[in-house]
Amino acid sequence: MTTATPAAPSKGTPFRGRIRGKVLLLLCFMYAISYIDRTNISTALPHITEEFGFTETTAGLIVSAFSLPYALLQVFGGTISEKFGPRRALFVITVLWGVATLWTGLAVGFWTLFAARLLLGLTEAAAFPSATQAMSRWIPRDRNGFAQGVVHSAARLGNAVAPLLVAYFIALSGWRLAFFATAALSVAWAVVWFVFFRDRPEAAKGIGRAELAELPPVETRATRPPVPWRQMAKQILPVTFVDFGYGWTLWVFLTWIPTFLSSTYDLEISSFAWFTSGVLLAGVVGDTVGGMLSDRIIHRGGDSRNARRTILVIGLGGSLLCLLPLVFGQGLAVATVSLALSFFFLELCNANLWAIPMDVAPQWSGTASGFMNTGFGIAGVVSPIVFGVLIDASGWQLPFGLSCVLLAAAAVVAWVMKPQRLTVTDGRLEVGTPAAERPAS
Image 1 (cartoon, helix red, strand yellow):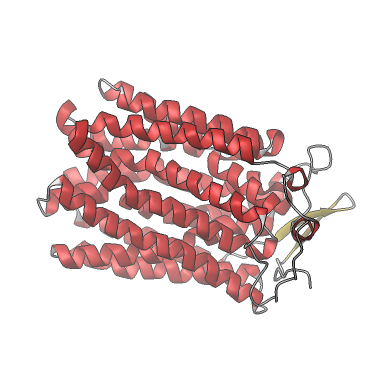
Image 2 (cartoon, rainbow, N blue to C red):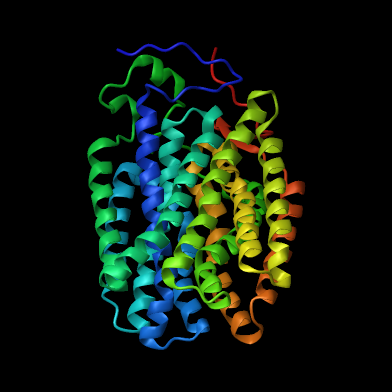
């Protein structure tokens, strides 16, 4: 039996020596693999475009195919994990997206690529809401920001690794091998997850009473109250718009930066893969720092609403300012530094966006996070297509400028929004300001 001394409020509930630390590590691998699978096409895109003779607009359509079902099924994906549990949900989801990635490597033209990306978006739609549901069961509420920051920093590490990994496989045996290899990674993770994870912490092997006491209670299907859709929409809709502005710019980075570097500065794949990875690595730091900063504000006595939106405004505003040099055109060194700094600030937002549904609707965190992430999915549909059309029509400056405008709009909404916590007590829905979450002492 393990024992633990409650942590001081200023430091937050600990992860070391806890089963939840292993759960978080396993989720980190899933987030990384997820982003390798959804962004590997960006590095392979110049080769795919050359093989099939696609325009930039056509390439944008292929990339956007992922986001159409991803956007439409976010809320439904969140309810899946609440109904069946994150253990079974994530196992099935990950196996299916491995199949979609394999199919991408077998594509013979536009329609097979488009269909494979549709299937990938369909299967990944429920992944992060299901993971958020898993975290709501296994992560103390005072560490929501930290946990979301860590898993999303792993996602950005997947972003950063993907260009180098795909470039290696392309040099080894062509672009198709990259998709076969990453498909195998997805299926392997699914097997490990199903063997190790348990939906209810008390069913986990080796967990002690001290750790169970630190975790929030788990609602069952029988005890969980119905979703308060109207009140949830009122609280989460502004966050969804902010997530759209964030997602628009993120998809620019994930989809077009390799093409921007290779076409603007005439770089070979071995060169632009390193530059792209360097830019995306900045996001790893941003994700981790963003979650830790907001949790630190809460531990020092601030409320979660102000903590989250403060970091959101800093992140969106900083990303905008650092992206401005690209609007006016710059040399390779300035462009790379500007992109890296912009991505760092942008990723300060990610953990805080995902922590808000956990703060606001702890009893329906899967559904609430799916609602919020619909904004990201819609951005993923629109951003690659519009960006590609604008590149074909006018070059790179105008689409970067449009991204700056959307970042500014998202920052304004982030500053004025005031999401409040939804809870049901004795059958009555209560709406109130999220208070500072502190571990029990």
